[in-house]
Image (tube, rainbow, N blue to C red; front, side, top):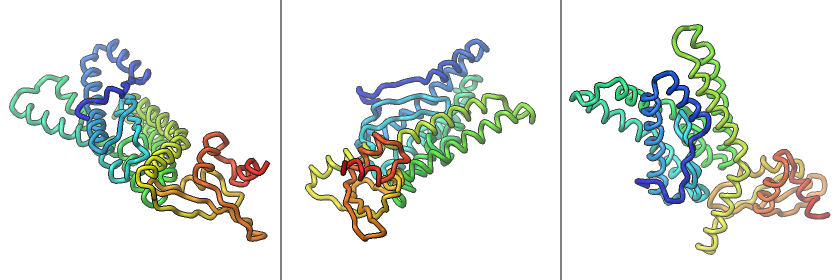
Length: 293
């Protein structure tokens, strides 16, 4: 999307607004505006890439480290398409940095604010490639893992990595003043990342719902899709099973009773619906008991 879809809603996170107000009080509001512009353009790069692969952006939330775009058509994206959307943001920031260097070389970008805008774009490009959600590098990691382990497992691993990056950034931010190298703003950035990564984990059950809806729509269109059978015991957790679901392929779950050899088939929809209404720690056996009672 060269411009965001008319259905896309922009939301600036309250903590980002608080940071802008603090910058205004400190007399560096011009730099805050430059940082805001860099973040917004970074996110518009994602929007344009999402449009190119046929996904609709329902909401864009802006954070100091970049933004989080919620895609309506995420369930239909292949791992390669998600990587394309994820890379678009850092590439946009890097392109802005390179263009800005050209302007600076010819004497058109000499102000302190302009130079700060260049620095902000370079930092956005580099930092967002770290491999943890909600950063763009985390989306790339998730897409790569999805091809091997499924979207659920990939999201969980990438979100956990994002929490680790957030905690490490907080620690570095606290140590910064002691080392005399950077301020506590790094700790605030780490908090943003940890918070957003934790939210990505909580979003996992809805990710399964999105993918299931997309697969059912694709089935109506194509009449037939590949399928897979997963074998589980009654003690297997719902989330443990759902992590193995792949987009573009329907799954049946054969629940085996190891003692008698009996089994029961569950559909992917049954597991996904139970996952959204039950605890993630609930077992397949709980689901079967509910169905039988």
